[in-house]
Image (cartoon, rainbow, N blue to C red; front, side):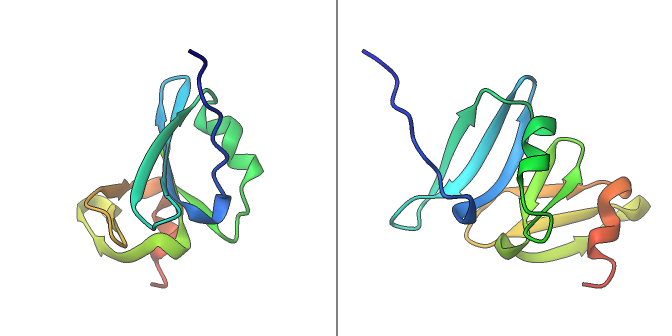
Length: 104
């Protein structure tokens, strides 16, 4: 049996997380439920294809959709925890990428 090809609208993507040569795409399906898919591209190849007004890198292994952020909690050593709307996952923003949240 062949594998199905799923087209995921970029505006439904909550975040992308690196997994070696692959990337986990966390998105919302047609019903708005949290879903996940794995693509065979590294995160570094996907980043230039995303709108920098909508998506920001928060860690070397994570990119988040700004519209999906519920709130950000500042942590120790200039890090932050990024909480997402309707998701239990919390993404860690590293010191290198924390500047995106200084004005929040």
